[in-house]
Image (cartoon, rainbow, N blue to C red; front, side, top):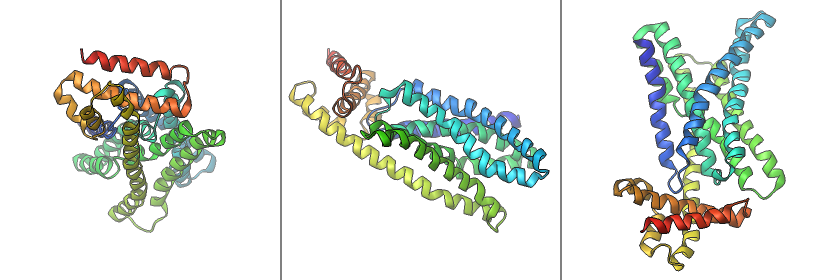
Length: 321
């Protein structure tokens, strides 16, 4: 029973957080299959893979140095941040290279990075809640660790990997070849650095217990604030894309003026669900149409943008029949 409860506490809250991240994408939702895939990667490929590599490095360092403390500090502060962020970044890279046309805004980078991070947190939280919680201090240990991992540190890995996602998004959107090349690496370095700082500060501050935890959590807040600010900015930017790109669709008679205004509301995709599947799909298609037109203007046809725009217009027209 404790194992099952730990598993549920590890995964269910992260699923809920993932739904919230999906909701944050106000104007053009990403494919659910892709989002589920990167969450799965974070939980099982990155989570289990990092556990194996970190443990192997830790054992090797202890055998080589003869110091368990040195091995623990080195693994926690250096090895784990590099290994975990690299494996998580692989999922974002797969989306970037294989599903490039889905990667068309800064917000997309944040969404995919956060989803990978939440998947990783689900696996890690399960381990901490059971191994470091229940097995050490019974049910009270389980409860305390669940609170720490879900409430205090629940967004930690999502925040780290969101910076990697931002790096890939900047690469996708930039016209500068140097920026295209270097941006993903800068995003990854920021993610690793924040992760290493978080893991290291507990070793070096002169505090214990709740005081130590409080200081660690407080040092994470600036990273959270940057990502929240980027999400707000990205949604405002996405709204401006819809406003600009859909104006011409009113003139050509594809949509009406009220539909044009409604498409710009940050709550339309949420409320449209209650108006029927066709209505929800209609505004999803408008969001994709606006972003695809923006892609065509900024990046050219990319072997199909113009064709996809016409397909979307046809689909929108057919929904009215």
